[in-house]
Length: 620
Image (cartoon, rainbow, N blue to C red; front, side, top):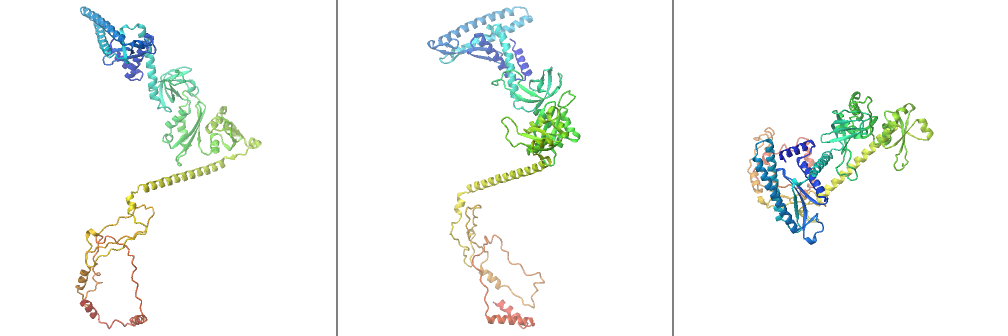
């Protein structure tokens, strides 16, 4: 065996079938195992096959359970301890004979004249010697490890296998590669269901076409195409991945394509809208429903999430340019293209039913309130003018069918006269639009109320969690009800409160369960004693009025000493009542009135000597 050729073949097969080399090797081992089971005619036997990619050696062995002779029930699956030893010894003798024969043939080949045939013979003999040495080593290890209850590998010499088993290996290998390819195809496409993919047509006839995709091949029947469209080999084709079946799907035969692709589904039309219309792709315009008869007519209901954008206008485009790009891709090589109606979606069902019958103009709608039978839809009567009746039905009633499919209603088209004869009271379309606006407003208000309710519940939950997370120490620091604290701590006159005596009060908890009024202590810290202030005031010289400078001309008096924040730790309102103003007697009141009268007459203080008063204050 040429191992280099084997490696090259494995690599080529892996590349052609989009498989890894490990999968190809596993497929080859599986094919050899199945062929050997047929050779030994024991389908339930345990067979071990190994292919060493470093050396290229292949080993095949049947594993038998080692048991005592009297406990053996099936010779094909079980073996006696002594029989296992004898089998190993016999196989080693045969291998030794094979080795001697190969060495003799090699010496004989070396004695011949050099030629390509001689070189090929020497290469085969060297490979055979390598196989014999490998088998001898494995059999010796198996003989040494024979144990009761263990597995004894009965190795098979590859050279002894018949040509029949080689053909079975080839057939099984092709089947194993096909199964591996299907498994790999499923792993690739199982996450791409509902997506669009571009392929190449490999084969096309009147019934089916074969399309080669990026990672596999699929076959499409005529019903999966759009109308009577045709393709030629080599042409590009867009398909919609509708389904991917696993290899061993229960209840279904392993026939037909594994990747189910189509061009006739509603999903294909959705993906075309996403590709050609930007607002649909970015989610500004939503496709709320699609009803389609491939090759004939389709209806697409759209809704805008932005009030500033018209959904139908965005899909149609200027002079129908956007919708035309979509229509051009529906029906390859067809002269008559599929028609598409863009419908404005509404949550109000009667108005939605009226819009679904476009391009026909609907005068009014009546939806039956009776519950339909199981498997049937509610009846909807659409009132149209006699001139619009043909358009409302459409070709072969396609417009009527698609409208019912889009809305989920059973559509009945009537003229106003027919509705009157049947006694059907219908609502005009204009009134339906007003009712739809009112219904939309009610739903928006209900949604707004629901969001507010949820937000209030979340806020209450956050407050509850915050209260539960408060430390117990904070609650312990709050004063008990009825407990009083002094407002001002007395400081002896002439003494300064020590630095370390000033303490800041810890504020109460920000979220007390039951807040109680708390009176806090006011600590006052001064830098100068009262006695020093009196001395400073008494020592300040006072000038007479005549020699005194006018304070107003000099810009006012000097500002008093500024007391900083560090000098007063806390300033709290005093609770003690302020002293009341003195009450004057009748004589004092009369004296005050007399002085005021003298002031009005220009008398009073003119005869007073202010220098005596200044001297009095200076001396004292």
